[in-house]
Length: 398
Image 1 (cartoon, helix red, strand yellow):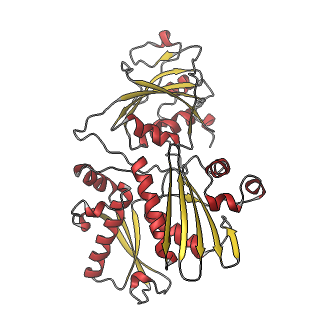
Image 2 (image 1 turned 135 degrees about the vertical axis):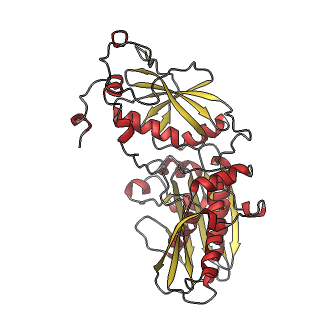
Image 3 (image 1 turned 30 degrees about the vertical axis):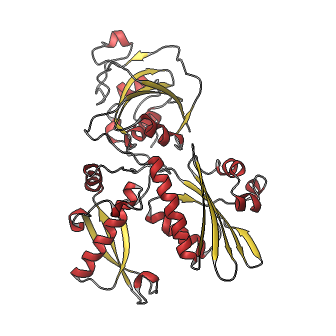
């Protein structure tokens, strides 16, 4: 149902005052960066005995700790806690009969779906002085060039491939959302097989921008008759890294490649919070193109959900521009790294100076603001704190 049926199309300040109750009931808007099922692990099991279930819970918690910290070596740094205390719920499901390396040659026809308590896991990581990646993770664009005997090809979204399935499984285990390129005529005009094979950064980043503002992961895979080899490139907003790997088993090579990439991304984007629980800094974000109540709700919810952000306060409104004051849990660079790959906000170089600025102040009277008396004053908009700290400018994308 259109928002206009609830509230008339007044400017955003009037909307916030007249329709503030909607901020409490509007659902969170889903975006590509929000990783679904981040706290869920599915594992094959031989039976429903307590011993098998407890072992699966322990394995699932280990996977969850790696996923949440972004550190593939975390289990070497801590003593894992009792897994059962971190499981919210579980259920058994049927699965297709299949043999896999992890089943030791046995065919397991059922699996257990484990849902973990994300808050408790994050509290555990904090108490051990470990970083937390959080629930917002930029979608990575995944390119793979394959030479298999006389054949060479680029994998695309519509392909069915063992390589694709294995890579998707591995990235899902690490909690990294990925997208394959369609490699249509538009892509083909910008990038060729040789560009992906060589890991050339300029064409990879140029063509990947249509899919995501997140990192670009590019690899090549070749079979020489006895061993698989692959070169891998990670391109993100501020860094690039490369690896070369070899293995007789392509699954092992892909696993090593994904783990190295995921660890590198974890170091870049996981947030190490202040040890004393205090905020390191308060920064100001001036955001343009926030012209509707829905846009305001969207950007505020997004900022509040970032792991680097402790709280968000609206400080000023003017035309289509909004200013937020953000208290951070960690470094300013942690916030900027997250925003650099955002699909919702784009940094702008020049400050946006609105023609008029209205300070949100609960003490102001309707006559002073020029806005009729609100039926409900939105929670969180009742104060206008003194603002200090660094200022950055962004534009809300449609």
